[in-house]
Image (cartoon, rainbow, N blue to C red; front, side, top):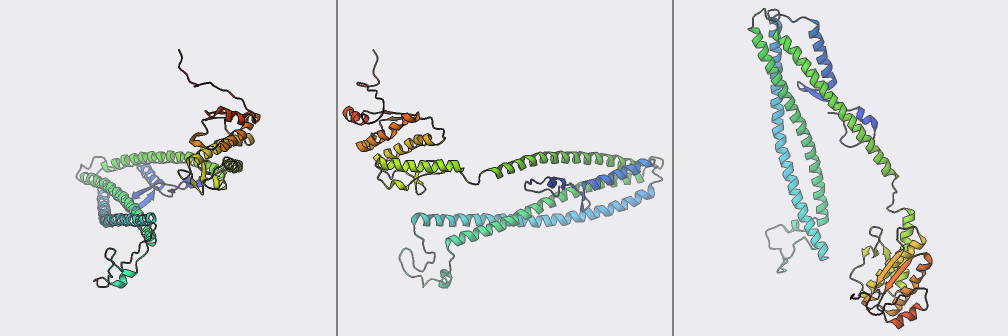
Length: 416
């Protein structure tokens, strides 16, 4: 198959150019040309009566000579291609070994670079002094001038990668040529088998009775008709494959169009506005609740995880236990506050169980309750369950709009 791109293309004309090539002797001929030639041969044979053997003797002898010359030519070409194939196979094995060696060198250099990065120190690769005893290496048998010109690890990695890409490109071309030579050898072998069968038939016809009809002419007609059927079947399979590729091409073009319509940024303007406002709310809440591990203005919301972060890193164990609780308050309450102003998927309900864990300060807890008492007016509900001292709690709730439900003793009690 020729003129078919290895890469998907959205151009409809790209599928009108591919065609099939068949080996004809030592050359590649298009399937259409071979089919036209065979149809002409069959038409010529049908126009004339089947001759007798005695009338075909000279033509049979001449055809035997021509077939013998063709066979010799094909055998010479097969030997030439086979010899080149053996040399190229050796080259491919050498290239594969070279690429494997480069992979090994690249892995070692990457390990060195990783160790340097982890240690935070770029070790010198010029061994002017012994790393163990600190003695100078002047008295060694190695050339000291050669030791000073050592390529840095990062440059060495880039050099090895460029070498690897170059050899991989050469290997890909060699393998493509190898496949083409293998196909050519297969086609030549198939033609030789057909020619040898025809030579045996012609030789048997030379010694057949002269009154017999020419078996060579009959077989040539049968063989040509069978070859036409095979080629027409191949053409039908090729046409079906092209039709399937057209369907895939239409789907590919639609995907490209949909991808082109996707926003260039990760977030739409609306989502970016929500994320910026959520960041402002988290910073404001953290400030109100007394977050002090670092400045609340350094808090931000990740565009990937939508979780609080500082300078691109998610906040973990670097905060105290009480500040970790304050940050959780800020984040959860900011989400429900954001739903009051922006269209989100928040259910409008939030439940806190013992929010004052880790002994967070009473002012922080008081600010928490005061700020979220506005949820009722926004048709939202925030439920706090706490074992805080009742008198202290009632002094706070007396100043805000809320509903108290007091359970004497344990909420969960044994029945009976």
